[in-house]
Amino acid sequence: MSLEKTLLIASQGQDKLKQMMLGVQPGDVVTLRAAAEARRLTAADTFALMVINAPLADETGLELAIDLAKSSSAAVILLVKSELAPMINDPATEAGVLLVTKPVIPQLLEQTVRVGLACRNRMLLYKSENERLQKKYEELKIVDRAKCLLIEHMHISEEEAHRALEKEAMNSRLPRVRVAKQVLERFEL
Image 1 (cartoon, rainbow, N blue to C red):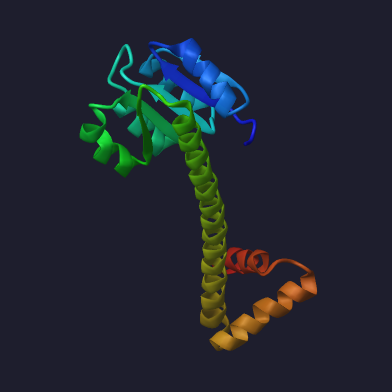
Image 2: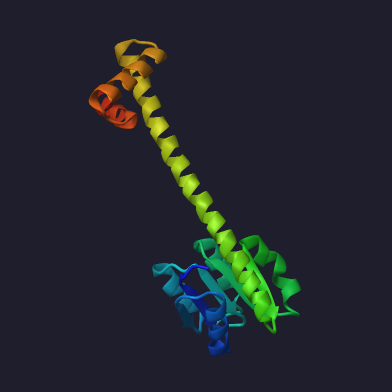
């Protein structure tokens, strides 16, 4: 496992859980006691893993877990009493929060951490691919807009506009999108 930061939010049993977490996920473990503190800290810092021992001093913990799962890329694990798990399983699962029932079995916690981090890593790969594709899509929009302007102002076909952009990109040793931006600057107001 990687040496990324873990956030542990627990009103009770902090020391025992911190020791358990260090055995499962080596690295920095930041501990907090309340949801409000966690919201402030996570707005400015990133964590690979967030573990919440419910209930917290200022709320149940479910709301915080759902908020953190929606606002970060961290794996979020919520520790709850076994009798409460069936009641909160659906909203937690829909938000991407992993549940571990108490009393905590160390092997189960370790397995849940591994699954959570594996899912997080997969999500980060998808996020990176999505960003790459979004950038490519934006570049294609720019190139298409430039082709439209060439067609409109130079009265040429789409194929000729495409060839003109490609030729200029090759001759000037610039990326096609850069040449397209130059065309946009030249013809747009």
